[in-house]
Image 1 (cartoon, rainbow, N blue to C red):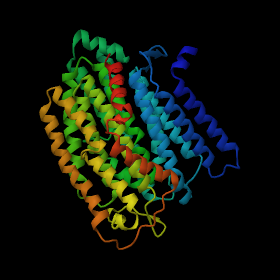
Image 2 (image 1 turned 60 degrees about the vertical axis):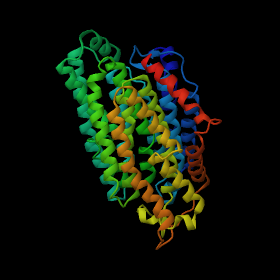
Image 3 (image 1 turned 90 degrees about the horizontal axis):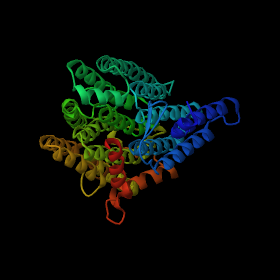
Image 4 (image 1 turned 180 degrees about the vertical axis):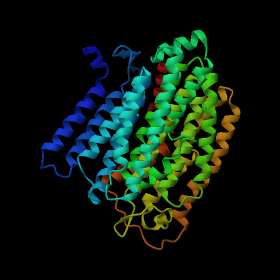
Length: 482
């Protein structure tokens, strides 16, 4: 390990040192009993690193003897992860204070989970990949069960832990098979073997298990079984975090592992991704229709959206990688806005999570209803909202790769999924409320809800040009496949 290595891994080093320093501060500074200061410092650190990563990196740099890779792709993904984590952390404070859960351990665990995500997207080796995944997962297991006096929260943490352990086993087994048939765990070394010798039967089995483990992390069907229960049982700010940064990290990791290690075996892993993508899109669209709990509905929504994101990855091209990054960035912004509202939903001082609780919102809180409607319609992919353009890019990438039928399947699933988003808008605008929501959004939540709605409604306009996300994603994809 040299100074150059540490310089290349600057965000990870700063985040690790910051997490340990804030942990010590929380332990020894008794005046900061509620942990609010540590939460704000953690969010500021994440935001600072996220903005610094937006500058990007020229070329490809490796550290720690090739175990760690930094390029434009990693920088784009890290900026989305860091800013998404910072936003979800800020949105958590009011809820945690209200329910007497505000402890300094929560933001520290978020920092450690985010550190794991950064390592994931810069992994140049299967062992680095696994270490990043486990660092993220161990922190997420704890925060899923953070509300210790709630049986449902404890159950959510336990289910996530058990199923997460199974997925880690699949990932390790796949990595061991890949190592056995290539003689290396380095992604560049695996790519060299695949280029020279092609994909053997044993290596194909290893790739299947590797994809299965990664599909669990992105909550793609048929490895989605943990998602609805964990989303519903976890404290709502934890659910908001699950729905943002980890999704972007898992999607970027999927792309990194497949393109860097198996870039010359696109036809082999495309078959896996096409199946997973179709299963996720249709399961997410159909299963969400009968949900009455908004957190479970958003869980199935996330499964469906990860299916759409994988359509871009299945294309196996630079355009597909670009579409994946665009889709993940848009998805994170939409979820930050939606959860800014859902976190504050209460009736009689207790959290309200039923879809029916949104009834009459347009009469009591018209501005919030407009913003929520914009976000729900964007999630549905209705033009001209930005969510439509996210799906447009992944479908175009699929068509250009000759997967016209996959794009058609995605369009059909999108139409089915639009039903439950439109139902949410219908409940807000046309249903009579039996009991009014006790909702008062703090300034942070108002900014997140209103800002996300405005971005979804207007950033497609030429003079805003999506804040340059298309060009940035194109450069990032080029650096990955360069």
